[in-house]
Structure formats: C-alpha cells, structure tokens
Length: 368
Image 1 (cartoon, rainbow, N blue to C red):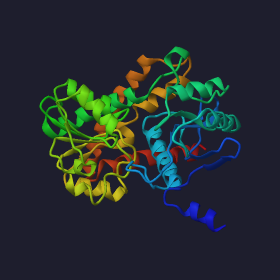
Image 2: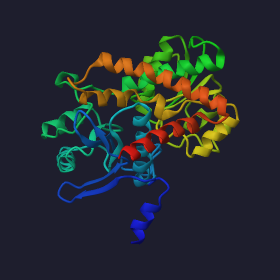
Image 3: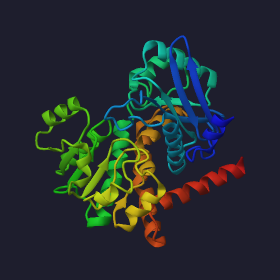
Image 4: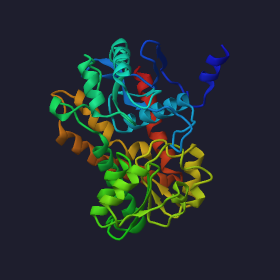
C-alpha cells in the first residue's frame, strides 16, 4: 500500500483517470500510460484520450530527461495535454505513453500494439520523442486502429512537428507585436534552446523572415547538421550558457522544467515563446517571470498545432489540411485573449490559461 499511496500522493497525479504500468516479459516491454481524462468524442461515439508515445531510457546522460522519474514525466505531460486539448477545443482527453527504451524495436512495437488493442480506443497513440511516422504506420500494420499521425499516403496527417512549429510561430509574432509594436521578425535576435524536430523548423521560419539565430543543442551530430545548413547561426557550445544570451525572444525546445527560479533571472530576452512542453518547473515560476517583466507564451496553447493536426484524422471524412490550417490560425487569436486578460488581472498568462481550462473541466464534470 505504501507504493500505491505514494503514487496517488504525487502532486503530478492531480486527478488522473487512469495510470497503467505495462510489463511484457517476452518482449521486454516496460511502459507507462497516463490518461488524465476521458472525453466523449461525438464521431467515435465513445470516451477516449489522445497523446504521444515517448521512448527514453532515462539514463545518466546529458539529455534533458536524464535521471528523471518517468512516472512523474508521464503524469506531467498527460496533464499538460489535457490543458492543451481543452483550450484547443479538441474532443479527446489528455494522455501520454512512455516506453522505457531508446526506440520501438519490432518486438516492443508488437507488444505495444497488443496493449493498444486491449485498451480498445481509451487511448489513441501518436508520435513523440524518439517515435515517428514509421512507428505509427507499423502499429497500423499490426491491425491497431487507435493510432494517429501516420503517413499522408495512408490518409494520415503525417509528421505533426511542422504544424506545431506553424502555430508557435504565429504566437511568436503576436508576442513581438505586443512587446515591440511590430510583429516583423526581421533584425530580431532569437535564442533557440534545442534544434530538434520542432525547434529547427521553427528557427528556420524566423531565419527565412530575416531573424538572427543563436542556438544550443546537446547532440553533436545535430549541431554539425545545423551549422552546415546555416553557417551564419551562432552556436553556444555550453548548453547551460544559452540562458545568458542576449536576444529578443528565448525559444525553449528542450525538456520540461527548464524555466525555474534559477534560470528565469538569467534570461536576457524579454519574450519567451517555444514548443517545449511543461516549460515552467512550477506555476510559481510563471509568476516569477511575469513579475520580472518577461512575457512568456503559454506552451500548451502555443504548441497546439500538432495536436490539432493528428486529432483531425478522426473527423468525419478523415484528415483535411485546410481545416487544420484554419484551426491553427485560431491559436494566436486565443492567446491574444489570454494576454489581454492577464494584463487586466495583473497575473501571468499561465494563470489565465489555467483558469480558462478549469472552467472547461468543470463544465465537463457537470455534463458528466
């Protein structure tokens, strides 16, 4: 009972509907599936949830997730997904799956497919860290219906990363407009923390609109690739030194909790807008940034483009890119209202967004 009580007492547990621990001895699969909520989907005519499948060993490396508790990460990320889907008006609950492996090997994939079969639609999988379109396609080949983000050629939405970057870029320009009086990125300095699947295309968009890029990246091979593509970009060799770089916008694209009481006072950018999940270590850290005059876009609002894209596969008639792009345009409009209310109430944007989402949760509970 002590272990169970401890898990229920985690601050991150926060009313999760289900937390599943999966161990398949034959394949070696060890996985955690955290389902924050189940929401009735009118097309599927059932309660369901949606979230990415993250693969990681959580070993002692310089990686952003190294030596962290995978249970807490699963809980935090499914919780963030719940806020994200609520404010994006997506008819799915929030969820997250973590597989304790570097990648989905064929054996692990088959075992994970069996898990999805058993859940029968309560959890719909999509790609995430160290998983991709090929994995989603292979899960479909195992006869799993409950998968999103598979190849365009098969009727899927494809890689959600460009859609995440697209929505984040629009919110970034909103931030520029509010702080500098112009949304034009030309001549502005952007400080990029992590050049991954979303961070790189996002930075490329700022580069294409004549912004200046300074970046850090823990993967040496990725650094070499980026500098080969963009020799004019400034590379910060020490990842920790990225917080000290002067610029106009800081773009977090690494792991969660990078904005905390130690790093926030070091920031030399007046704006923060990036695609990383759970950027603040605590809600109080969001308050600290606001008090210091740093305007931080709400990550689970600004980053909703990828979720909007994969969720659209379940609409009547299947995936429709025009419909997705139309919905993504609404992200910046939604965030403009968050900024407006925050200034009116003199509270951080994160506080405002949480209040908005809690109203939606309360309505769902009443409609029950």
